[in-house]
Length: 269
Image 1: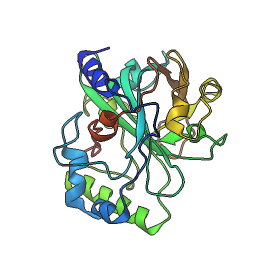
Image 2 (image 1 turned 60 degrees about the vertical axis):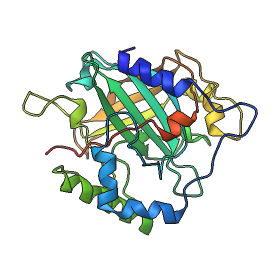
Image 3 (image 1 turned 90 degrees about the vertical axis):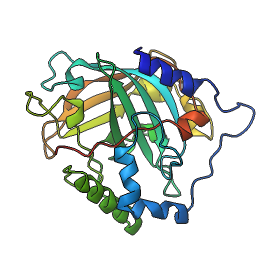
């Protein structure tokens, strides 16, 4: 592990939620989440510090999750650059978006390059799940736009925020990948879409529990968690790029839910 990753993991894993009581699950209400319609409020998702939640800010979505250390392994024939050629260690957080009655899967991955700097990859559920567990839902930076009014308003606000900060996006929930592939103008080759699909091995290793965070604790270090696919443009079919392998077990903790921060990238400027 790199030093920043070691420090973050120590903070996340130091005090897991007690096993003898239900994990916290109360989501922020609609009145609190109204802030997500505000461009000024959403600037904090793009302009905050690298790893720790800004002072006085709390998660209004993705409120509860579980974290693990992982390694992104990239195939030798990757046509892309930066971390999508080298891969590297990272801190993974799987969470529930938390804005609906049903669980909506989301993923945040903080990847660390050889220079120790972290870059964030964010993804939402896309496509149909293969089993009843939400881990079987594919996850992508290019999820489908929302079809409900609240979701549309949040997406529009995030898109406006990115543009206000000088970035470009195809649409509100499209999360660009340029920051993973190196500085523009340095020969960076960037895919438009990444898709992560849980493996049968991972799905078969889940614990039986009513709480999906407890289920994840059944996965052992060394588990091949996701297969990673990439597409060079938004309309093309994706092809294999690599895999995500667990380096630790999953831990659900207050630090992971309240302090750990994954900054959004505005996209190419």
